Amino acid sequence: MDYKEYLNRKHAEHGDRFDTSELSLQFVPYFENRQRINIKNRWGEVLTGTVGVTTGWKPSFLLMRRKNQTGSSILLSNLDVLL
Image 1 (cartoon, rainbow, N blue to C red):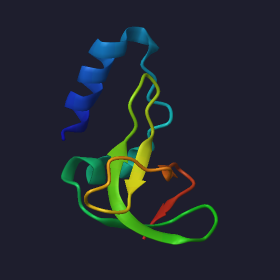
Image 2: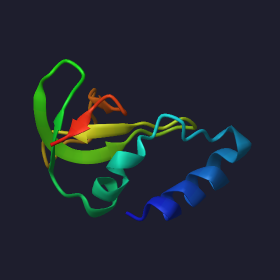
Image 3: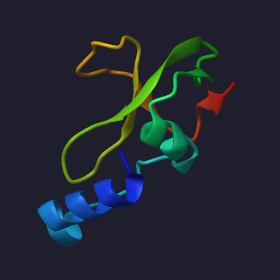
Image 4: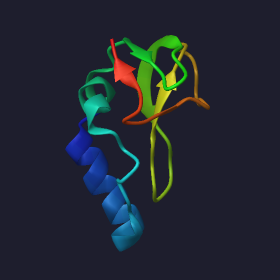
């Protein structure tokens, strides 16, 4: 999925309320190409998965641990380090 297309679609859907402040830009390339990544989270755990995104007017990137996963509780932020 192209990040700019995603932003345009969501801005059209939510208008001026749409807020990208929770989207950590370091994960954009992996959101677009669905490549599996390794991260070290803020607690020192190393996790693997692909990057997804939450729905709504203030989205966040998610780490999807399995291919067939439709949601995740692992939110990605600037505190997470790509390995």
